[in-house]
Image: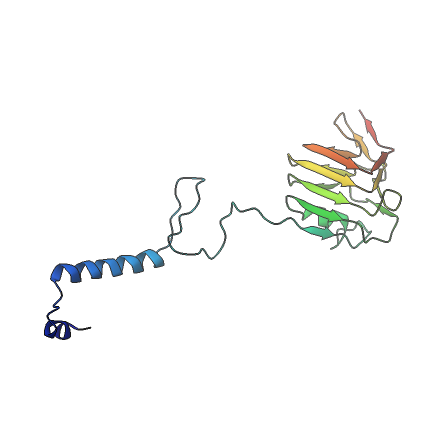
Length: 187
């Protein structure tokens, strides 16, 4: 509505009301289009009437089930070494679909630095992970829990006086229906 129309009806806008309306409209537009600034270090971001385009980094990721599709230890995609190295916190490395009876590690221990990871096999009588007396078999350098279920782990070897000839976890270790044998530490 323009000012002439309002004046004919006896409803002429007051200068203060017009200024206030302009300020509110400008403030509302600026608040919606403004880029949110973070608060103090570690605090959540303040989003004013706006949905962020990406979730804040503090939101938890969804744990994944990562299938191992190769019995080789050559560093190719789908091998236990590559899948475990790419696992995120809380992921499960699934060996259940493998048809081989043994994975022989030729490149040393398989390792991960995440805090929590699980390795699930098809059954301890169905799959063996063999360290071939060359190194440990599995190492978790994160501070959480390494869970191993339904596999057999054999023939790990470590030269030195450190813990774990077959399995080394810097946090907790949870074994379920798992056999570990033939492991040695030589000082």
